[in-house]
Length: 394
Image: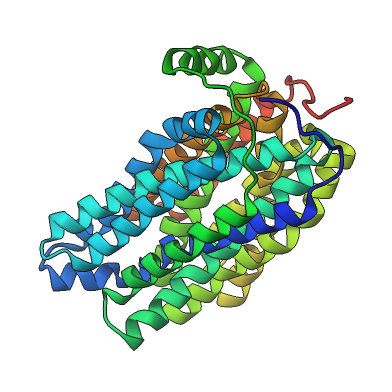
């Protein structure tokens, strides 16, 4: 795939891609508040209902690479539009499902669709953005993801109260239909190289043999291990069982980190382009691991809000450089494949983190659990001290 024909920062296109990702992530998190209701409605255990999240994550993990390969081969616009149709079909299937296993099948289909969609949009961002602007471009993209994740559950709860437990799925379908023409109008058709499966697999093998790319993958896994495990599993349980907060207060504590992450990402993107990817990554990883450990030493809502706000800032700092480094390292024509492999590592951390840290919470090892959440990130950061700077001209 050829390099972008201009060295200017494509600001408007990047903003649109950030908005599209915000819409997509919000769309997929609308159902979070109704998961317990599905357990009651279909008379299954809460653990079984939680499989609605697991099968979605599994579908996303298993098809990330193929989504990236599809974007490289057929173009981001075509891949994103087709995958949005798949997401809409999954949403409608879940809303209409008369049996719980059908809901799970529909959620798995949605995970596959989102794997293709998210990787295709990420590939397009890397293709249209010159290397010297990748930090600020990926910061806008990441801001959209975090903002969508913060808004989705709140809006989903309102929709469920207004309608019923199926209403969030119908809202997903409607949002998906709206995204299709937005992609059609705003995503440029770019020249592609018609790589076969074998050629794409060889390119992926060549990339993951590079120690610096493996380091970026390990950092991504560790960051998502910490984010998903501490923020989504350990923190809510700790705030409920140890601090004794209400559901509303727990929601405020969790949301505080999302708000400060959003505030941190745009300035961090400029720093990543100006100072370099590596120094921001190292500072961010150490700060993020240190801040999450503070949760276990806090036993009041004020303290938890303060720690959550600090943790959000540090996670925002650590999150921005990694996708920019993927763009630096991907050879022309393989941006989708590289993004897919990197996001597979992220998804693996998102799945493993809650399982490991949730088990520590079940054992009552709260303080140790919050410290353990950041240990993989610190170790990955220490290994990354030997990696070269990947930014252009450095």
